[in-house]
Amino acid sequence: MLQPMLYDVHTHAFHPKIAHKVTAQLQEHYGIAPVGDGTLEDLLSRERQAGIEQIFVHSAATAPAQVIPANNWAIGLNSDVPEITAFGTMHPGYTDAEKELDRLEQKGIRGIKLHPDFQGFRLDDPDFYQLMEMINGRFVLMVHVGDSLPPERNPSCPKKLAAVRRAFPKSRIIAAHLGGYQHWKYVPEHLCGLDVWMDTSSALPFMTDQELHQILDHHPRERILFGSDYPLFDPMEALHRLQTRLQLTDRQLETHLTAARDLFPE
Image (tube, rainbow, N blue to C red; front, side, top):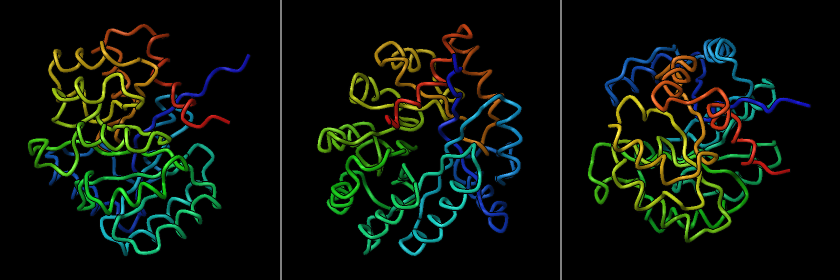
């Protein structure tokens, strides 16, 4: 019997020409010194050491002009590296979204990464809802949620994402950072029990035990996916943190490592 594949659903890898610049920007924004250099080679080396077999790699176009270059990078990764499932990106300001989404489908891209806070749009923007009309059901969505601003002022938050999920019932959505970076106290009310996945990236080091268990006790464990957020964190260290903080048996840990297979039903 084949063993289920082990996934890290939240990572980033950048072209060597920009990797240093991007990791510096991440450190400036989050105040976290990345453990990795952001290159594909470093990502693959660390994931192999952690025993991860399939890696979701994300990038987000911070301006409409970046959509094509970012997607070309994703298409190349997806076709050239068997261990990688690369997600494309889209921007509400990009004027030929339908054509680009068609191209991504034709090239075998199965997911889209959206980062409202970095991309400069709100999850309740009408322009974003128009984009969702085109995306709905065609791609898995990895959506960044949360930041330091209060939910009502922040571009993304658990409540806004829940509204998106209800408006687009065909959508398959991963709410990054256990439903909302720095917004964890709002996740049980708005996202727990909803038909969404969450990932563990950039969450556990910053959460209280109460925040963590309020989410874990009210959302199916098979809908909580392991994500390291490389290059900010090392996959092996993130795995160890997940297992020890949640006091998981190896089999329980495997649930979080394998459940991503359900994102892409054949």
